[in-house]
Length: 161
Image (tube, rainbow, N blue to C red):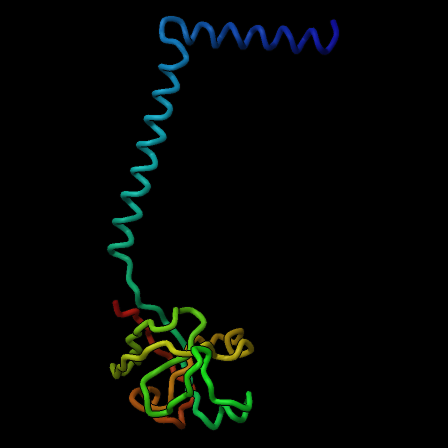
């Protein structure tokens, strides 16, 4: 017996099994059942995604430093931010790769001091991001949280809607 004859016998046996299963019901019955249960599965997953997102927190741990007009001039030769405006040390702004421009963030230290900043720039430098730094705060916003001598601080960041 050749390989093709064995395959043909195998397929005939499977067709008989399928034909027995479909007796009296037809294929549409099983297709409708399948589509129904797939729909139930999708709705269930959507429901739990909504429930979990409701209880999920927007607070993230981060490492923050500060940058000034002088440090920008020293590093890049200009003090224009990524949004096209000039950097102002006295405004409560920050630079981040993780948030969209205009996003308001509540930045809080472990000591409880907090400040609301707006994302207006991209940063920190990629080499600092690889080392774990996630936020560059303006001089005024860093001063509201800690002394400039500290340089780098651990903070929690929460998106304000």
